[in-house]
Each structure stands twice: as structure tokens, then as C-alpha cells.
Image (cartoon, rainbow, N blue to C red; front, side, top):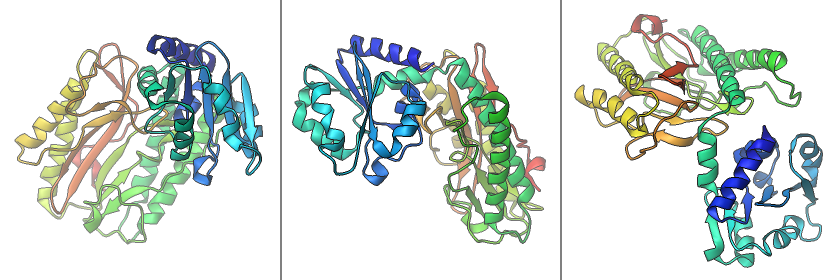
Length: 381
């Protein structure tokens, strides 16, 4: 799998006139080599993947992570560097770019300290962006990636079920977060054991639980707190950060109420949110543009008298945000094998309702990979 990706990347490099590429984005390093979970710029320790269009692939990584690199990285050579010894990570770069006429980099992902050093080695006019190449390569998922997507959906659904069951009058938000994390981890462990042979891949879910209740409901990315939930309050659960199975990410969220809906206007807002997602799904299929899906969703919301909404969705995969996005201006034509998070959402000053799921684009439409009821009766707990 990784060898095939590297070969394809080199082919695209040649077509783009790139002699050597320096890859520093975590997810792209994993996509090309299988190397992951190293600590790098967070602790001032860069990891750099060097790919020559016709030569070797070289992974420059801290000595502290050398054993992990040897175990996971599908590369021709590994160069380990240690803190304070010699030129550290800089020692290999002059040789790597010395004869290159064009060097491909990830403009938005290269750490500033690495970019500053590279600017001393390569004239700025000789630098090209390698980001579009990898973004295009990663749009269409392989069969293995689609299996991960479906399994990620099972993990997300387990978390949603557990979160729903934990919501109740008098319960603090953080208890819901504990329940979702445990359920997701157990489901992930079950799937890893049954279907995968990477013994180092952790099943543990991570990322702070996105949820909001009561008067915090309009805070889209509010984290679980010590707030005590009460009867008739709305509760929002989002797993867009926590759904990360075998490094594959999805989007998934729901709005609930405890016992009853006290404010009947909230029912109407919720129904419009659900209808907006349904309109997007009616448009979602191969051959349409990404922006047309957003248009269908936005029209429902605006016809109901609400403000123009944020993007309808985004492609996901090994990154939380991939190409394309379901938003005005993105004219990418959808193709089978793409994976999207697709939302329905309406916001007003005192309330917001959101429902979101993830889907695989198929030959004739889409396949849902997250499942949870969204009818009004089903979300009143």
C-alpha cells in the first residue's frame, strides 16, 4: 500500500517538475510511509520526509523516535538526529536539495524553523507547492481506507449511543464524555483485534468531547464541563474530533433534548436543520460539484428565514479536513470513493440545532457510515 503511494507520488512529482519533495505534514508522512505518532515540532523536534523523484526516500526523525520509525516507516533510509549534536536535522538537507532545480514543499505545513533554514539553501523561486499533488491523491480512498472509514463509523456510532444513554437530568456533562470515550475505545479495540495486524495502533479515543447543553448550546465547539444538565434542555454531541479510528477521521453529531422540548421554536429550528441535511443528501452523488451540495442545503435554511449557513460539509480521511469542501466556490466534481461529513444546521441567537453524518460516495449515490436516528421523537430522551 505505502510503496504504491510513494510510486504514484513520484510520478506526479515528475509531471509537476519537482526534483525533490520535503514532506512535513504528519498525515502526509503517514500516508506515504506508515510512520505515525511521533513527537516533533510540539517539542521542537522536526520530522522531515525527503522524496527524490528518481532516488531514495529518506526519513529524518529524532533519535528518540528511531525505534518507532524502524518499526513503521516504509522508506529507503532513516536518518536519526539527536538534540544538540552536530547540525541535528539540518545535516541531511543540504545534500538532499543540492542538485534539485525545483523543490516541493508544503507551504502551509512546514514548520517555520525548517522553512527558515530551507530559504538559506534554495532560492524562493525554486520552491513549488507539493500540497495539491497529495491533496488530489488522497481524495479517492482505496479499498483499505474505505474499510477503515466503515469501521470508524462503527466506533462513532458506539460513542453516540453511549453518549445518548448517559444524558439525563442532574448529570454533569463530563460524565457523558467519559461514557463516550469508554464506548469508543472498546469498539475500536474489538475492530483492531478482529481486522488489523498493527499491534502498535491504539484503540483509545482522544480529543476533548465536543458537547454543549442548556444556555451553552450556541457554543459550537464547547467542551464537556462540570455543568449539570437539566430536564427540557437541549444537548449537542459532536464526535468530529474523537472519531479517529486507525487514523481515519469522520464527522458525526446530533442534537438531543432531556425529557421534553420546552421552547417549541426549537422544534421548528431542528426540523429545518434535518431538512437541510436531507436536501444536501438528495444532491450528493458522483458527477455533481461540491458547491452544488452546499447550495441545496443552504437554500432550505434561507427559505425558512434563517441566515446563510456555514459550509455543508468537508471531505475527511487521514486528516480532519481534506479536499474538497462542500462550500460555495469549490467546483470539484464528486467521484466514487470520496468520504464526506455532511451537516444540517441552523443557528439563532439563543439556540442552534445540528445533525451531521459521514458518507462514502458510491457509483450511483452514497453509503452512510454513521447511523443514529434523527427524527424529533427519537432525539427527545
